[in-house]
Image (spheres, rainbow, N blue to C red):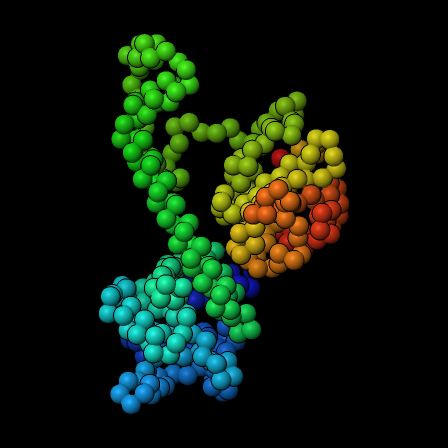
Length: 354
C-alpha cells in the first residue's frame, strides 16, 4: 500500500514540477510513468507513441499513447499540458479514438486526470481525479491500470460506482441546502410529525432564533464532540465509542478514513467475536475496518485494498445477499472470520489504546 501511495505521489510531484512544460515533455513523462510505475514495456511495443492506425480507406487514428498487451489494445492516453483545463475538443478527440479503435477505456491527462469508459448505452461517462497528494482514488487508479491487473469491466465498475456516489453526494448537499434555507420550518415540521403540539412548538420558537448553516470540516465547530480519549473509565461499554469518534481518533494519527468506506464493529457483549455487515460493494473499493475492543479499550485498524478479497472468499448474509456476514474472533491473533475462515491480520495497519 505504501508503495502504491508513493507511486501516485511521484506522479503528482511530476505534474506540479511541470505545470508550464510543453506537451512533448508531458508525452515523455507519461511514457516513463507507464513503463516504470505501470509496468508496460516499450521494448515489446506495449507502449505505442503516435502510432498511425488506418481505419478503412479514409479514417485513421493517431493517439498520443496506445497501450497494448500482446496483440490486444487495452486503452489509450491523450495528453495535454498540465496547465490546461479539460475542454470539449479534447473530450471529443478522445471519444473519437475510442470509437475508431473499439476501446472501452481511455485516459485524458491535462490539469487533472480523467478516466473515460464506454457504458452499455454507448455513452462515455467519466470521473476526474485532481493531482493531489495521498489521493485514495489515485492509488486505486494505479492498481487498476497496472500491467497484469488491467480489467476493463473492473474499471467500468469503478467509474460508474464513483458517478453514482457523486450523484448521491450532490443530492444530499441539495437537501441540506434546502433544510438550511428554511431551518425553522424544517424543525417545526419535524417536531409536529413527532406528535408535539403545534401550539407548544410555536410558543417555543417565539423564544428562540434558529440559524442552520453548513461549514467545511476544517472550520471551527461551535458544538465540538467530546474527545473519546477522555471518556471516563467507569463509562466504558460496548456502545460508549461511536464510529465517528473512532475515525477521529485515527485522524489524529494522520489517517484519512472516509465514513462511507469504513466499517466499524465492537466486540459482541455476549460472544467472543466482532460482528459486522459491510456492503458487498466495498470489496471493489479501498476500505477500512475498525474493530473496537471496548473491554480493553483498544481500536484495531485494517486497510483492505480494492479487489483484494473476492466474493468466493467470504460469506454473504442469507437474508441480505448485498451484505457480508463477518464474525471476526475476539482475541484471535490472526483476526479470522469464523463464517468464512478468512484471516484479516495481513491488512492490519495500526492499533490504538484509548
